[in-house]
Length: 537
Image 1 (cartoon, one colour):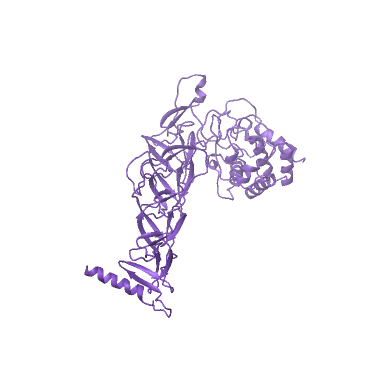
Image 2 (cartoon, helix red, strand yellow):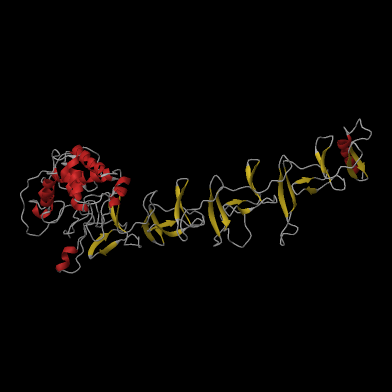
């Protein structure tokens, strides 16, 4: 009782000081029993109005003229046990306007400097963001159309969060650390703005998203995915449990080895694939498993050691018969017309048994270019074919002029005749239409390494690198001189230098040494005829 007396006295002092008036009546605060009231200068009780005490703080007189305590005022303000308007402060109160299932629910409200409760959306308080409903109740869990997430403290979350899915009926958990496997929980990523990352994709699709230099896979709802996923026709693998990062390079899954490309690739490789200086075979289509031992691929036997590396020195004789010419496969042959059935990876030479005669060499591969860029352009346009500007543009040659200029520059740099390389490219690609196994995106303009049977050959990063590799390979056949530029032709070392100095001798059956680029009879002769026609343009 003594303590209450002290509190009442203190309140009396706060309210009473400064109430002296020159009017007939004393305007100001007065105590009436246990209540406080405020009289105006006419000695009338003030009602439904805010008044300051001598301490400068606002208090409210209700409809009976009594100072309100521990109550809402106009559903926007709140006064504490001393009747003082709450400002810049969190208060935990029973929920206003509760629903049928929210009786006696206690929630947090925040009152701004003006005394008004914060409502309707986001508000920054003490450098943290909070979300409030229309009544001012602080929200937790998924908010703002399930686009953001707030913890049990109401603060907006950023970064990785392991959460109940927004459409899950169970109560939300504010758990941000790994805790087992649950089909109703997923990892979500919230950007620095607090907004959940959601890819712009169709339902059922997935999309890669790079976070801190690492790729992850997300569904259309923003849930991080794990395991095998197919994106854009290619298979990817994302580490399970609480990781989710995209696998790259070598990976052993279920006792089998797979290869997923580099850091910015990650797609599962299939078929023949070269890693470093070694060839591997990863099965076809949706297989992707690294093969070892003897493998029969498109009717041809190949041997792969325990590490999956193709060994061209091993020969498997299935049955001495007419099919014996298919025993040794050539995974990296330059013979794009597929006439060559014997050979080894990296070999450009075929001991061909056909009896076509050697032809006279007339047109040297090495030497000064004898056509102009304009002539090359005119020759291409005469074909009536459409230049694939989209694909070539991505590779640094948006127009046919850009394309021809690159051939001219690269040929001059190596001392190889530009017309030879350019015409060969037109012959091999069908005037840049790429109707065979080699695709335009590979920037492989001469079928390098494409042996048919689904083996698409070498791939290069852009047009210039693909042109440079082709010209360097031509130089390997047409000259014994060293390269002037860094070698980008992975097959350069396998060529017998100077074994086909004439264009006509690029055809193996027409070459006196039975060496050459292609196994087709008349391959080089056709190129020379095309060059002569181009010179008339």
